Length: 219
Length: 320
Image 1: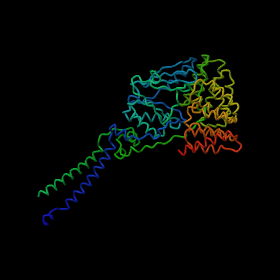
Image 2: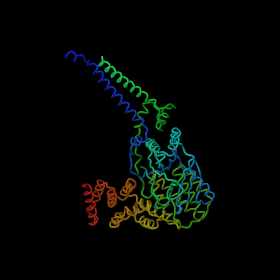
Image 3: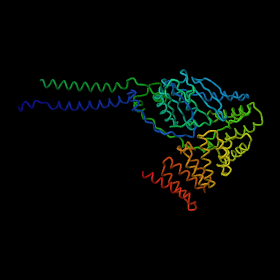
Image 4: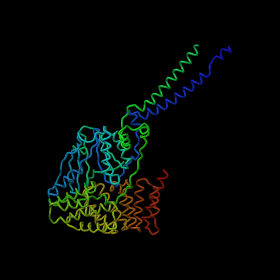
């Protein structure tokens, strides 16, 4: 009996234990790495960086409004519209409103009823803008925007639709890294969605007095 | 023999699994992965079109930290009271000049147009009449206001702005904006009594409730505090939430109240206003500090009682 018991080779047990330990370490490494590169929606949502400053506040800077819709980034033709108004009025004409289409944005800019400023109204068209999937072009576009509208003077306000919200998170992080304060407004993705019952997707004013209008804020 | 077979089988199984794990770990580097804008940025920073390296990709997720922008600060009203006049009848020629000026102001403020270019556009506008001087001075006042906001030589800008604002408010074409602007400029210049008259008129003729009218309300309350109308100030503070929609954004206006405390150092009620606004946003420690600082022996009894009442409120709130 005693001889029979001595036939068990204990070195095999040592091998088994060290193999199991090695396996566990390797599996842990794989699990960590796979977790980091998992891009499923659920993981992306749960792993997303929480909003650092959820409370809205009013920066003392000028706001620049941008739109993210249909997985495209749109710059609004505010400058072009104002230049057009100025060109017309310099000739002595009065302008009640002007319409123009640029880079996939249909704009109407009109004088406020109190003659104190302008109301800017925009409709986002499916064509135009910058494709958010083309990351290189997106970065180049953002960098040119940053150059034109620097962090010292501007904060950026995004009107975002659900189809582009994930990209907005990335863009926001990118802009935070560049020292830009960012505000956002999420639009419901409903057919014919437009603020204040109009056909326009985005409306804001400069120098208009209306109880319904609120200050553009950063978050 | 049978035992040895089992042992070899277990060994084979464990070694095979380990080898497979190593292979999977190495293969992760070559797995297809969605390229983010950060990857592109990293590759651009490296001045190369290659994909970011394993380690760059591995650590790119925590590269980003939020840096708060500059201190939020603005001058009450001067920032917020926008350009313009009421919706009364306006000569068509005057309107075209007004529109040029408004467009140029926004272009100058946001899109890099220079003052010289803006002035050239306004001067070149083909509209002529008695309104011309008024509209040009109005444009000039807006430029001065922008300079003031940007802290450009305030000691020079403020007297100039006051002179221009008083010209505009004394003109027949004046409207609610001219009154509001003149009131705030007088207040900043230390002329609270004159300011109150203009601000009262502006407040009652303002075309809509909201943010800017709220600023006028705050400025008006400050003039009452400076004039020593403490019961009026307490009444206004009771209504401040409904009359001043942006009361909760203390960062935007508390520095302005502090500026007024510097301009009018003997007016303790300004510190009381600041304390009350702090209390409304539940910053009880700051509110208490303001109340304690404001309390003076020579105060009237009613004011003392009110301040002690609010001090008690902050005490109770802190205990809750």
